Length: 266
Image 1 (cartoon, rainbow, N blue to C red):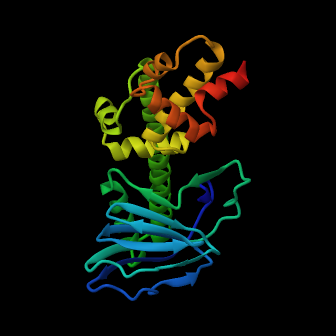
Image 2 (cartoon, rainbow, N blue to C red):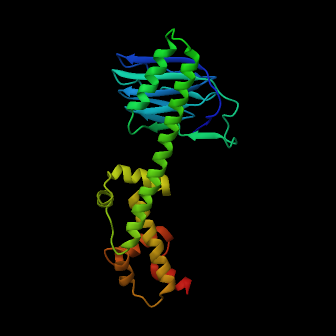
């Protein structure tokens, strides 16, 4: 993650467009910068590593590499890769404890990259020009870019949360149904990958794992609250194929059988 004080003025120290006709060497980039490094991958693919975390980049991705952190290219880029790269000065308020600092992810996939690409392109063009009020133009363009990226991140976070909440609500509305990931995704008009990403951001688990865990928690609650209810009825109530299916999954989660769990709870 990168913390940026969006109210602070900044200076561009470098702005370049790169075309890699051939794949690079594995450690083509290996450095620690005194500036923030913003990379937009226009075409092709590449992978960057910061603090030993790999970030595979595809078309439309933006990478925020923070000042003072070691980053490098572990693997060569794809032949024909195009990037924009900006080196931006660090502001005093770029700290996590600053309430005015905006937190941005190191790796952001832009859903509609045309506007973001245009900002990067215009910044590079003005940087290498002799345009009147050049520094003021660059400051304005950089502000527009940073706020556009900030808004993109916030919109994605809101979308992910609301999508996950809708999936959980549908699941709770039909506790007796076991939804496949692709089935729930189709009900919400998204891809399974989008659903899993939203669920992971909201709950830390993909949809299938969250659903299984949640149903087992509901089954455990029923075992405690309804000591006379048959295990086969509980299995049916939460979408398990049968009593055996519930028992196996329950023991994997809680370490004991449903019957033993019930005995210890009552």
